[in-house]
Image (cartoon, rainbow, N blue to C red):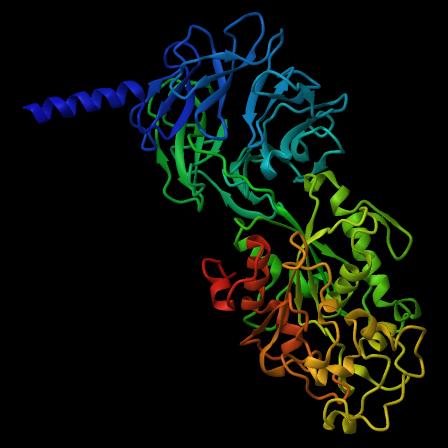
Length: 629
């Protein structure tokens, strides 16, 4: 008997206080719009606001202890309010006439809302929870309106929002800095489709939004990565969930969604009253109905703390004769994959890729043939820090672009010749347009000819027309006979290229800080740290250098751990600097050099280095927990 009484008391307490609630939502079941809570299975639905006014658009504070919402509590306007999670301690944040709606609470404390809502020219504003710092974020044009939903990402530095264009009569998504500086960047523009109600996952890595198809009336939920806006999944709700999606929220664990949508079984023509709340997995499976009534239930929001981190922009630099598509966006031979596919398969990785396009060598264009490694490095400089590139074209630069949320550093990944161009930037140009700042957090070199390409296969004949090839060969040719001689024993010395320009012979020595022929006797290298200057741990806020190459000297272009097949010691991929993490990657399929950036373990180590800000212990450890596309 005592046990039954205790159970009844606990059940009553659970019902009254809403203990164990997983989400909040809006319902008009009491004759007016009120804020409710309920458990993730639909049980224990409880009125939190319990007020005579209409309450709308709830959202949670970053620590999930308070609710921000809009209300008509103090006429004549609809304003922004805050209350505790149990509905107590209500505080008004904004005042004035008109309607201020759709408040969203950022990890950095800002609250974004729309005003004047439901009118042409509606803008997004931000304010702090204490009512200070009111500022306009967006400035729609005369035929535009920004009141179709918005949310924060990149730890509150950025806002994604839906803008209505009266000319096209459709809605598209844009991204802009939350401080209102810079021009918005359009991120969707699908013909005959309006994208509205964007919501960001609690970890900041995914964006879900409603996609309404004008021609067919179809409603879908699209999930994309906030790192590159690539589509992760297109979800179509199943009956009794119908059309007219009014609200979306990520579940607390980000593995599912709460959705308010018209339910087909609710009678009557009133779209608002037909709204019910469903849950569905992020994979589009396991759809469940959480509310069952003939009153409108909308605007679900999970009760969970925000865990957003800033997405790190990563600049990818391709090699000598293959562009960004060949190096990063497409797979290599059968069984390999690409960086792009890996990021799409692992949207939780906080990476925003930028694929640099450089002129491709290997043809007969004299302009490209005359390009130096320094020219490519100048383009890297412009891509990161802005200013003129090698063609004297003005570039914004990642660190100046509002789309990257005020980032002060990038990660840098270079493949083959792109790794050497990147090293040149790091040693000679980094910070030259940013007051000497260290602008790179991590540098990952893939199959880098660190001490130059060696062998007749790579270096060609003595009339080599391509300057970057001459520089990577140390300004000297190689022959089949010279390749058979031990390192450093080329006697008499091989002839320089007859086509050398000033500085071609000295390029490798200048870059590495020593004569590349000393690679035969590594203890004799005078200043190995010059191969990775401005690096950590010697410089606490410096660059982390990670150098990856194929095991067993299998790479015929750049070699591996030990010098081979070049009597001048050029064919050695390992970096001598004491701060560098060198790792031989095993299992790269033939053709080794071309497949290296497409090899799954290579990709794993690269991505793990960037997101963890440290090199993994092994390629096997790096691949643990990643989805292989």
